[in-house]
Amino acid sequence: EKAGYPHFMLKEIFEQPRSIADCMRGRLNVENNSIQLGGIEDVMDDLVNAKRIVIAACGTSWHSGLVGEYLFEYLAKTPVEVEYASEFRYRDPLVGEGDVLLVISQSGETADTIAALREAKKRGALVLGICNVVGSTISRETEAGVFTHAGPEIGVASTKAFTAQVVVLTMMALSLGKRKGVLSQDEMSKFIKELSKIPSKVEYILEHNDESIQKMAGLFTYAPNFLYLGRSYNFPVALEGALKLKEISYIHAEGYPAAEMKHGPIALIDEMMPVVVIAATDHTNEKMISNIEEVKARKGRIISIMNDENSDVMDLSEFHISIPTTNDCFSPLLTVIPLQLLSYYIAVNRGCNVDQPRNLAKSVTVE
Ligand code: F6R
Image (cartoon, rainbow, N blue to C red; front, side):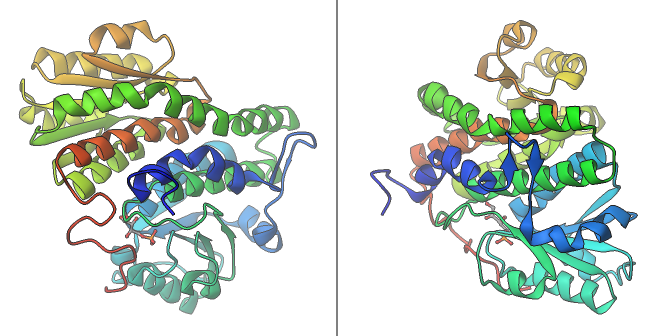
C-alpha cells in the first residue's frame, strides 16, 4: 500500500504531481479559459459581495490559509483575515451576516476548526469549507465548499493536502477575480495556462532535486536549530517548512518573514545555524538578497530555494536548490516541495518514526 516507498510521507510527497492534477481536473479548463468550481457556484454572488473573507484553520491548513490571504488580495482584491481556529472561536468574534468564513481542513474533523465554523454559523455568517475528506463533519456542516481531491493522506505530516488546498484557494481567487472584474480575460488566460503547468513543474523538482536534498540532509542531520525565511507568498512556506521539520525530526525550527529577522531572531545566527531562505519570489528578490547577506555576515549557513539561474542568490548560498520559474503567486506550490523532502530525509537519518511522530495524531479531535 506504500507503493514501494519506505514511508507514506515519501509516497505522498511524490504523489503531488498527480494529486495537484486531480485537484484541477474538471475545474481548470485551459481550452475554454475558465474555472468551474461546482461546489461554490451557488454562493459566488455572496463571495463577490463579501467585504472580507475570514479564513480559520489549524496547523498546516492555517499555513495554506495564509497563502490564500495573499492570493485573494492580489487576484480578487478581497480583503482577507486568517485566524487560528482556536483563537477565533474564544474571542467573541466579530462576524455575522454578510461575512464569509472559510474553514480549511484536511481531515474535516479538527475540533477547533469545527467549533469556529459552528460559532460563525450561529452568528449568521456564510460558512464555506475546503476539505479533503468527503463526508467529514466539516464537509457536512459547511454551507458550500470545494473538496481538495488529494486522495487519502496517511502520513501524519501533511504534504499533498497542503498543495491541494493552495490549488483550491488559487482557483477560488482566480474565479472570484474574474467575476469581480479585477482580472481581464487576457490576464485570466495567462494565469490559467501557468497554473496548468504546475503538476509538471512539481514533477521536475522531484526528479531533479531528490538526490541533492538527500545529501544536504546528511550534512544537517544533527543541527539543533533551523531558521526558515521567506517573503510575500513564501512567508507562509517558511512557516510550513519549519513546522514539517519540527513535527517529524524533533529539531527546533522557526519560520519568519525575512525582514522580521532583524527584529530579534538575528541574535540566534552563528556558524552553527542553518538558514533556509525561500528566495523564489521575483518581486522580493533584491530585498531577499540583502537578508541573505545579513545572515552571511554572521556566518549563518545559507540553504536557498531559488528560481532557475538566479546567480546572485546562488553565489551567496552554501547550498541551493533550483526550481522552475513560475508566476510569483503560484510559487508556494513549488517551493514547499524541497522543504518537505528536506524534513523527510533529516527525520529518516535521525531514526524518527516519520509517519507517526511522537505526540501527534492525524486528526486532532480534542480542543
Ligand atoms: C501538519 C499537521 C497538522 C494539521 C492540523 C490541521 O503536518 O498535520 O498541523 O495540519 O492538525 O489538521 P486538519 O487540516 O485535518 O484540520
